[in-house]
Image 1 (cartoon, rainbow, N blue to C red):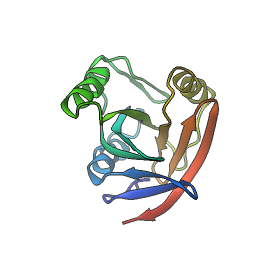
Image 2: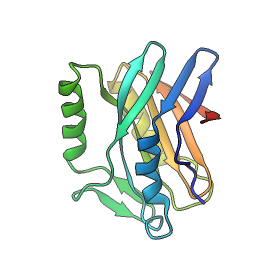
Image 3: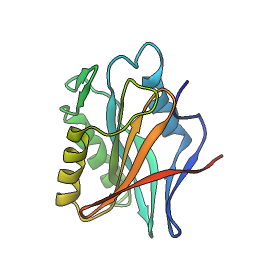
Image 4: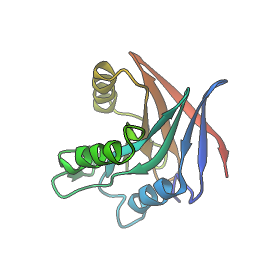
Length: 160
């Protein structure tokens, strides 16, 4: 069973901030938690926009040829992820951009590894905008909102 469904999901960060995840993004990620794919971690970046206090995720990249996929590791090495973020930025006059990243863990209920947490803290240290970090497992999703030095776990508040 997949941690994501094929419809729009809203994550509630707090009383005034939401993360909106588009259906197309869910479908793209769900491909990598099938029985065929779940043995190797997969991942990519989220592309979307900051809408006031909210983050709307409208697209994502998926594993590319130079990325490293192992049973306990996904390492985003391919420059195509950066190229996708830049293309989105240019085609929307700066509205759409990198807003976070996702990867899978081959377990039912994922939790971040020490490496995951270090990587995310490094990203937050060099970017002033909030970002979304998501790990998708076979049964559930672990999701966090990061900003500055803080990382706040969030839960699904509505699945439409």
